[in-house]
Image 1 (cartoon, rainbow, N blue to C red):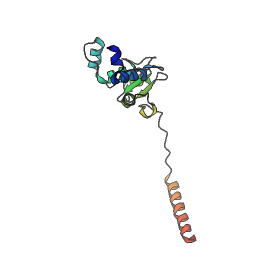
Image 2: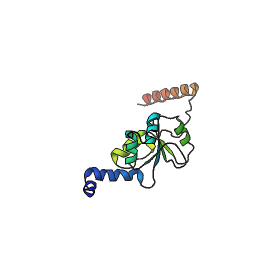
Image 3: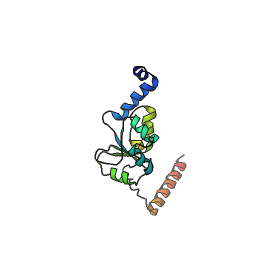
Image 4: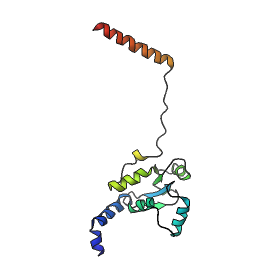
Length: 153
């Protein structure tokens, strides 16, 4: 009967998903801002059903950890600035991503690119504002070049 279950469509999908984050490189994820603390404490004792986000991560083959350490590969966070996201910034190679990355992996049955889902990206580049005199010069240059084009026609 077990062999028959593995050959069913749900069984095949489970096998495919288990290898997405469970194959090399292995994912060790920490959830931040997604599971209330009282639920985390209940999960640790095994007294409650696991939250759906934990089930998604585990079904993809990821190992869900409670806190960030040197082995953490991903922090899946609801928002920036939490204790776990700040710790993750100090861990080399640890990506801080939105939950959308995990869900995209789940639905596409592939390990998705992290870049579009980064919660913490590179710092924004400084935008230099042109001075008002430069703007006036540019606008007068544009109007004078437009006027010369009209006279040429």
